[in-house]
Image (cartoon, rainbow, N blue to C red; front, side, top):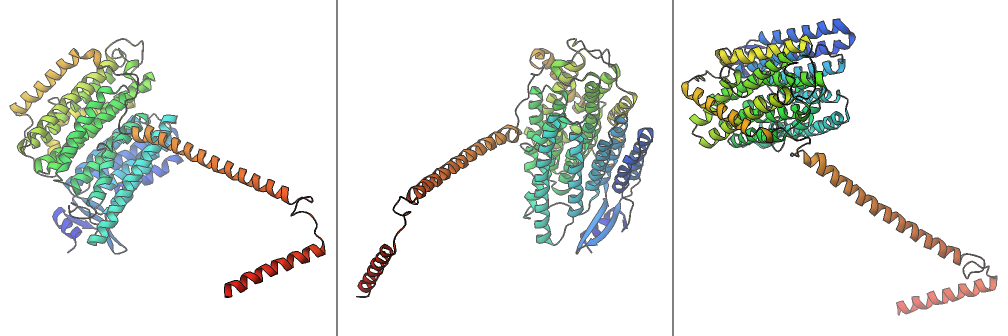
Amino acid sequence: MTELSQVAGQVGAVSSWWLHPSFVLIAGALALPLLKGLGQQVLRLALALVFAGLLFQINPGVYGQFNLMGFELVTGRADKLSLVFGYVFGLITIIATLYSLHVKDTVQHVAGFIYAASSVGVVFAGDLITLYVFWEMMMLASVWLIWRRATAEAYASGYRYLLVHAVSGVALLAGIVLFASETGSIHFDAIPADSQAFYWILFGFLINAAVPPLHGWLTDAYPESTLTGAIFLSAFTTKTAVYTLIRGYPGTEFLIWLGTIMALWGVVYAVLANDIRRLLAYHIISQVGYMVAGVGMGTAIALNGATAHAFAHILYKSVLFMGAGAVIYMTGKSRLTELGGIYKYMPITFVLYMIGGFAISAFPLTSGFVTKTMVIEAAAVDYRPWIWLLLSMASAGTFLHTGLKLPYFTFLGKDSGLRPKDPPWNMLLAMGIAAFFCIFIGVYPVWLYQYLPSPVDYNAYSLGHLFWELQVLLFTGLGFFLMLKHLGGEPKLSADTDWVYRKLAPGLFKQLAGFTASVWGGSVQAAQALLGHAREFLDRNTNPKSFLGRNWGIGQTAVSVVIFLAGYGTIYLLSRA
């Protein structure tokens, strides 16, 4: 019995054919250019709804099996882990499609759908080759959500994004080749730690998870993306990477510290952020850090927590990015130093944003509280006091910046003189749907817990959890107002690890190019001078008046030949003696 047959026996049905939701969405996306206006809008909404509906109807099992060059490929491995990610990917596709309904950019819509379909393809891939194909499709589709903003910064950051993710793809492919040659299998499950492919595949996954110092692409590219494309971007790339880590690397000890560093790294850099979407991008890194740490712990509660937090994060982060996008769409401003005092003019946007802000800050009765605290609790029950403390500190930092700093300087604070209105109805409705799930999951967490990979034995609303979290939130709020004048952000871009390829590498390349050009120029000048001297020598010694250039008579020539032959004969005889 093959490994995949064993999986099929555990999860349910086996089928060689199935209607893959990703293929349906891709086919529909390719038909979008055929329609314009209302017809295209209707088709886009219908595609998103059908896509999500197909995902929610999948039963546990193994689907889409076929053989390719001796390898068994599976496009549909559906178990509790892949299904819960599929469900939230379906939800966010509906929300992002609704949010972008007013946008008249067919290329962007096609790219967004192919990106969503590819992400679903990754989480249902039962083998490494299928995973790799969808992994690369994600990269090729998502970069257009950056480029379609059509600014110089967007083109540059999109190009850097493409290069970084190309490295991820190369590392992943190298690992797959090593794994296949070593084991004779391409089945995707926990990668053995003693495998030669272990670190190659992990490196590819960590780049997409934006683990420092491999994270610079995210905070470089996401703030430069289109306003609606950012909703897709915030949901898929890092969360598919989290899925692959849960699947392939549970219990990998050093991921605990990498995740903890991530959680703190994002919080620290958010202090310096002035652009509202760059601040939110840093908090993607911070929140994914909790998930990576949970993967590293590898216990049932930790893996459940990582999965649940990924689900909740996709929804509340979409609210935050949609709120930020609405502000930019209606004001044309994206910096904290340019905004302020607009809550009276965008009241619905402000309220919906704050629901997302409270959720990411783990306020009781919101989704973040019932998911993030599960990861922190996992550290406590696994006797990791430093991890517990540092993750709790990162949670306080999240509230400080996303729950307080950004809304205060964007919506409250000084009057910037801007008088915008709330955005179009479709943007508000999309925000409202995501905000509803932020509250619904917080009030009724059992709905989410039932979908998690393992049975859940966790009560987020114990007195201990409530008392501790309320203390953290209260003192963080107090600290914010005490340090208010120091938290407004500076009108500049803070250097991060992307400085290496944004500034250092181009600078070194310019210096190297300049040095090479000067060496080449000097070599050319030297060669030209040498050729000039040679020409002068020839000119001097080949004119009719020179020794070599004059006409010699027959007698002089004969004497010269005799002298040459006599000299040659003498030398020959002496050498033979």
